[in-house]
Length: 210
Image (tube, rainbow, N blue to C red; front, side, top):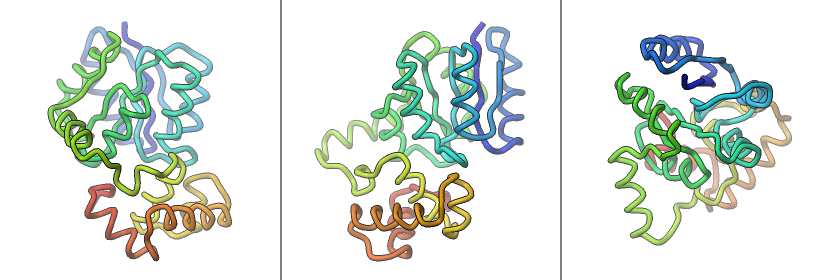
């Protein structure tokens, strides 16, 4: 049996994923987590074969969790989930050690196939992501947001989604002052002047769901 941990902050999404996976005789949902911190705790207390991890979660974002998981359990495959279509985020996930990147609108059979694929020790790369990887190699240069750390990327996505500083602090589990510090770093690294420019950049690069 392939033991799966589902980590997503939306109960409806977790329920939908669980229903899909329970139809497969060789896959079992061994546990569920509502945020990144809870996911890390569960990973440290029991054995899983595959982690299904949402990119955008409160307390600890998916990319941060991925980084910590790969540092502690390098052989544990992590499939990242996002409501966004394949974009540069998928490339970032793979470079960070993710086993694959999946859109939440994928067909049930594709999800099951991806889980079986990575449980066997292989990467799951869709044709769209493969094309993005090829394009990134051809360009030979990284987009501005590629220089952001996982936490900075999480904060950037929250800002781009129109969240207030207080809302971001609550979602990320950090202080308002720390959010402001991250915002300053993000704008400096990306050579942007304000939140409005950041929002425009995020939309143009497919980093937020419009």
